[in-house]
Amino acid sequence: MIDAVELTRDLIRRPSVTPADAGAMDVLQAALAGLGFACRRMKFGDIENLYARYGTARPNLCFAGHTDVVPPGDDAAWTQDPFAAEVVEGVLVGRGAVDMKSAIAAFAAAAAQAIAGGKVKGSISFLITGDEEGAAVHGTRPVVETLLAEGEAVDHCVVGEPTAAAVFGDMIKIGRRGSLNADITVKGVQGHVAYPHRAANPIPVLVAILARLQAAPLDDGYPEFQPSNLEVTRLEAPNPATNMIPVAAAARLNIRFNPTHTGASLVSWIESEAAAVAKDFPGQVTVTAQISGEAFLTERSAFTDLAAAAVRDVAGRDPELSTTGGTSDARFIRALCPVLELGLVGTTMHAVDERVPVAEVRQMQAVYERLIERYFAAF
Image 1 (spheres, helix red, strand yellow):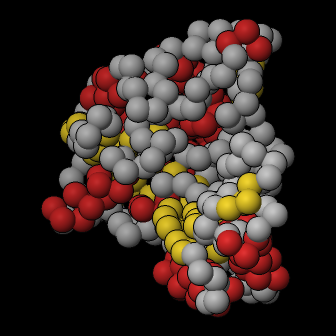
Image 2: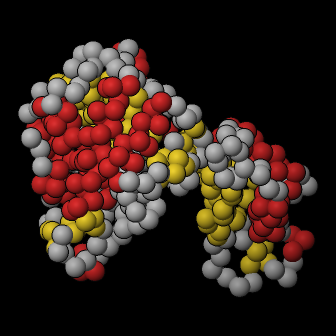
C-alpha cells in the first residue's frame, strides 16, 4: 500500500524546479514499480518523463501530471522551509503541495488500493512529466507523440491539476481555452523631437495597432466557454533621452481564446490589423507569434459523468464542469484520448506557503479510488 501524504512529502523534498528533476521521478518510479507497474523513462532534452502501465488489456485509464514546480521565491518569506514538507496543525506546507505532487501521490495510492482489491479490469497508466511549468517543449508533448507513433492505446485520461475554485470537488475541467502570445515590434527612424519630419516615430503606430486590436470584440463566447480576451502584457520604447524620437517600440499581448478561433486565424488577424495601421508608415512592423495551445472541449459523456459521480459519492457535491482558467498539459493529451482535470483547490499554488490540508489529500485519494472503480465498471 502507498500512503498518499507520505509519498507527497517524499516528492516535495526533491526540489524539482523546472528543468531540474532532483530525484523526484525516481521516487515516483520506485513507488509504482513496487505495485507492479512497467515503468519507462522517456528523456527529451534535459527533461525526465515517465510512462508507467499496470496491465496490458483495455481499457487503459491514464493519470497525467507533473513533478516539476516553480521556484519558491524568497525562502525567508515562508513559514516553513519550502522543500521540507512539514505538516503543521494538519496542513502540509511545501512547494508542489497543491501543484501538483499531492495529486500524483493520491492517484498512486488509489491505484494501489484498486490493484489490491482486484478492481483493475484493464490497465492503469501514469504519464508524468518534468516540464509542465517551463517551456513544455520536452515534456508531455513529445511523450504523447511517441505513444501515438507506437500505437499505445490510452482510452481516457485524468489530469491532477488543481481545478477546484473554493472547496475540493466543486469543479472539474473538461476543456481549456487556447493561448497565444504575440510580440509586435515597430521600427521607425530615430531623430530629434524638434524635427519630426526627419524621423518616423514608431510609438504612435504601435499605440494605434494596440488600440485597433483591443477595440474589436473577439466573440461573444462559445458553448461551454467564456468570451475570448486579449490582454497587453508588455509595452516599451527604450529611450535614454528626452529630446529624441526612438528608433523602435515593442509590445506583447496574450489572447486566451475559445473554439470560435484557431491560433492561426488569430495570428492572421493580428498581422492584417497591424498592416492596415502601418500601410503609410515608412518604417517596419513585425509580428512574431507563439501558439501555446488550441482551445479544446471534452464533450460530456459517460466518462465525465462518472468523474462527477465519484466526487458526489465522496465529497457530497456536484462539481461544475468548466473550461475556465489557464492552460495545462491536457492540451497535448487531447490528441491521445478524451481528457478531464480533477484536483485540489488552487488558491495557494505558486504562492508563498503553498499548502494543503492533509484531510483534503485523503479525500482526493478517496475520489480517485471511486473514479477508478466506476471507470472499470462502466468501460
